[in-house]
Length: 269
Image: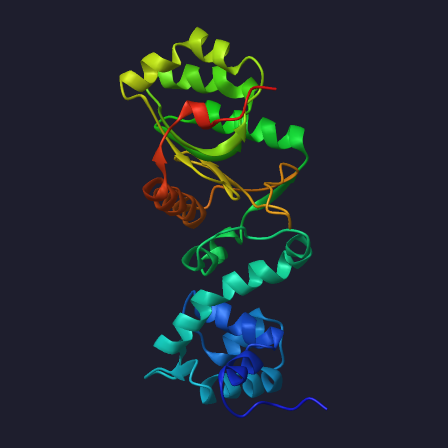
C-alpha cells in the first residue's frame, strides 16, 4: 500500500501530485490571490481550496502576505520554475520511449521546459518545408547544427546570404552529402561567401541533436534509440526561451567544434 513520504524529495513530489495544487501554484506564479478568488477561478469549492492551500503553506511553497493575500515563497517560485521541464517530459513520454536525447549535456536537459510551447512537426516533407520557411524569413542570421545536407535548400540559403543574413553552421564529419552539392556550391559562389565572412562553418566528429534557428523561430530534432537523427519528427517553436535554448546549445557546440574539413565528408551519393 502506498503511503505519504515523510522525508526527502518524495515529500515535494507528493505535494505537487494534486492537479488543483499545481493549478494554484501556476496562478500564484502570475500574481497574488485571495483564497476566494483562487477558488472561483479554478472552479473549486472553498473547502477544497482551503484544504489544498493549507498543504501548500505547510510545505513552505506558499505564504500569506500582510493583507492576507497568498504569495509564492522564494522556495515556491524556484520549484514552479522547474515544473515545465517535468511537464514537457510527461507530455512527450511516448516520443521518448523510442527516441533519446543523444549526447545532450545535462545543463541542457535541465532546461527542457523551454520546449513546453513547441509544436511537433511530423513527416520529412513537412519538416523540409518548415526549414525552407525559416531560411526565407531570416533577417539577421541563420544558425544550424546538421547531420545531413539538404541539397534543395542551398539556393534558398545563398539568396538570404546575398541579402546580408549571416549563416553559421556545424556539420558532422560523417555527414553524407547529396550528389550535385559541389557543383551547386560553386554555382552560388559559396567559397566567396566564406572568404568575405558571410558564411562561417565548423565541424564535429558526430551530430546527434540537430538544431536550426534564426532570430524568430527554431527547430530541434532528436535522435532515435540508435543515435541517428530522426528526420520524421521535429520540435518547432517561436518562444523566446526556446530560441535562447537553441542559441546556447549552438554556442556550446561551436566551442567544441573544430575547423571545417571538406575532405572528411562522405562521398556524394
